[in-house]
Length: 258
Ligand SMILES: [Zn+2]
Image (cartoon, rainbow, N blue to C red; front, side):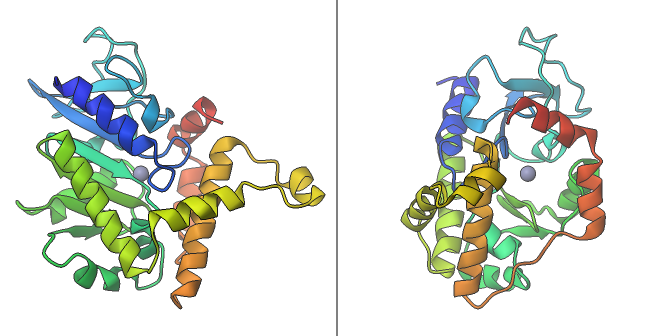
């Protein structure tokens, strides 16, 4: 299978899981050689990526967008392209409910050494998405780093091939799920239940889009699981919230997918 076919298959497999990505969240990339990288286009769902659509092409050194010059439909690259450029051939970045149990809870990183025993990883503190976050990841990267945890954000894994990246991504999430006593079946059941309309006020006041419903299910699952584990959720700071709400990149992303 060629690189773009593997990239598309990987994106569709990971993107089919609501416990891994919700709405237009998460992104994948592949280094194509000659200093080029294909990365999911901003605003699209991960499972929409195909061999010739819903991704952009950038130069890894400069992050210059060369999608149209490479003959593909011009789409805006993910705002997270800069850290993908630092990593291996295949990269998966998600906002999975299992890794985010640790990433979105007070002292959640304390769970990592036992859960991740034998699997090298690094942790980046919460930093506004973009170049600053990439710099923080770059400072922490070691030659053996294949797993990056992002506080109040998600997970990044990298491998030489798509199968290896997906296997590593599954393993990290399974380890974290088990550390918190939950499984994929628990999330699937929770998401199904959370989609039910229970009484008229919910219909009137909580008329959510599909993307909003998915994110709501993920957030509530994280809250309930943390509560069951005696943990406390760790909210984003006021400065981080105001950066995201004023950022054109996020407004663009939201305009693509409802
Ligand atoms: Zn992200």
